[in-house]
Figure 1 (cartoon, helix red, strand yellow):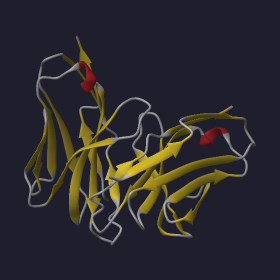
Figure 2 (cartoon, rainbow over the protein chains, first blue to last red):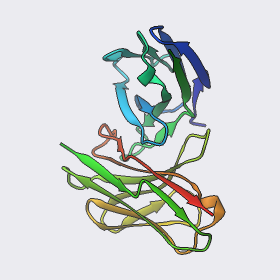
Figure 3 (cartoon, rainbow over the protein chains, first blue to last red):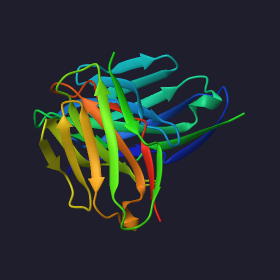
Figure 4 (cartoon, rainbow over the protein chains, first blue to last red):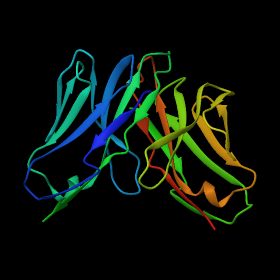
Length: 114
Length: 113
């Protein structure tokens, strides 16, 4: 069964600190993995997207890694800011069809305290 | 550049009333279009997707329907809303195999009372 599991479910950190969010998946055949940031009451916004051949991708203070062998990904946030408070969603796409079905994790709710 | 517009942002409707949520995409042709629902603490659930005008695929049986009257317009409807239809609805678009351009709208918070 194709699944995407994220951990932790929620996380609280102090402003300026770093943190790492985890994503494990069982989606096969694998096409790509994305990390989205979703502010409360808004649509998800793409942070990174990685294909099978990529093992790291950065977007400012966000760095995503991918280990396609172990089917794990992480999102590292450096020098956190209050505006980083949001839900971070891991999404994996398969290539079993032309449309490329997406499988969503339930997200990690990150809260950054001053 | 491509943009996606979704409205309204919030909606409060009585049980049994009709529903129409609209989504439009600009800056691209023949996009794949999607409607998702997101329940609190849950992942996004795909409701409908469309690969072309008039082509609608339903993922889950429900009280809702979708239509695509134009290439870049996607509408989510209901004839009679149920309390269980409350949620956060998201429209999204993508192009090409692999869906590299997968982009979400800003969402509609629907509350059925």
